[in-house]
Length: 247
Image (cartoon, rainbow, N blue to C red; front, side, top):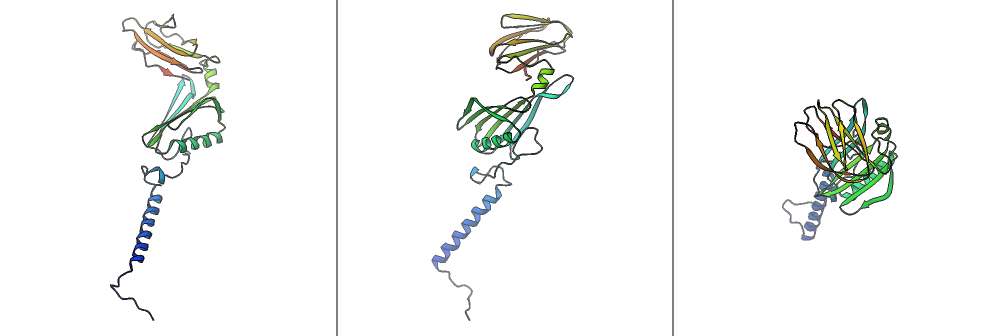
């Protein structure tokens, strides 16, 4: 029968083998910890999985996420839904996630104008509701996500759908005095309480001025892309609100 004495010295080769096992165990522990530590190196990052509670596809792992919608009075369904998120993952992994999840929802990727690089992605889609857009940008050790879906039927019913290849500007005045909008060498006067007026424009950058008696004129520049609808509103106090990308 063999016996082992306490205090026996371990041969050098066995000591090296034991140290190797310990190092392997530490590495395995770090890999399993990535499921609950959000800022581990991407080498140990877990796969991105969809969050069933998100209005638009989004991974469960994120450091920031927000959903924004635009609506018109009397219609509850949004004209436009936008998801912003910051995902602690490589841009390529986030792109693969969205191509997979959007495809499951019937979004069809459009090749025209697509941009795919190591630090920036911009893709257009045709979704079951209307046009969609995905933009991804490398941000430190994370990826910034901007995902937009437009609802074409709601825009048509609300009379804010741009003509094909054009953009639209909607001018609203809820103040108690007349307001005027000057854009593209044209001045539109809008009586207090009247229905919103709209103007079709070619895509491009336009300077504009909103004037209300008794208030300083508001000037700014808007970049109109084809298919976009912007809204300019004069509030009840006579002040011009910030431009809103309505659709």
